[in-house]
Length: 206
Image 1 (cartoon, rainbow, N blue to C red):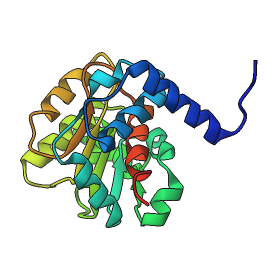
Image 2: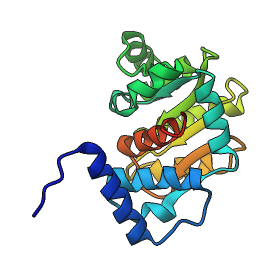
Image 3: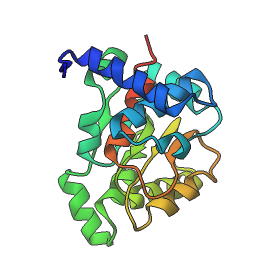
């Protein structure tokens, strides 16, 4: 068996296999790139049917990224998974507040999760326009509450919390909002999925 060692050749062959096994995408080329990147990251063809992209979400995301908008993540794992080369080129900061001392203290005092408190902190900075939530349903619920309260108007929400408690429900609520979003229906998701979506968007910018 020939072992392919070059990273780009591995990716190219993976994408070719995905095209062959999926059998085509009923969406725009830009949207297909996002879905294929998720499948590539998970080796799960079911994501073809699970990834949901709202109208003009890609357009809004690319415009925001090109303008240097900040990206907020709910966990450091997701922050580390987003391309530093591309964000450096575009001037996008990636912010994650989950490990901040003030977040832990305030969350304990108020009686909420740290992820929820992170969203409250994030919306205080108007440059934070893209929110990527791959782990915590409570973060997504809190962000949606802040939107409804008029405290933030995101240019994009990547909402892919994973798990058995609140994940599916939080994403169902996201689909009801009139904001640009990319999400994954059901229990599946996670930080690797959110990172793959963000990178698929970043890689579309020359």
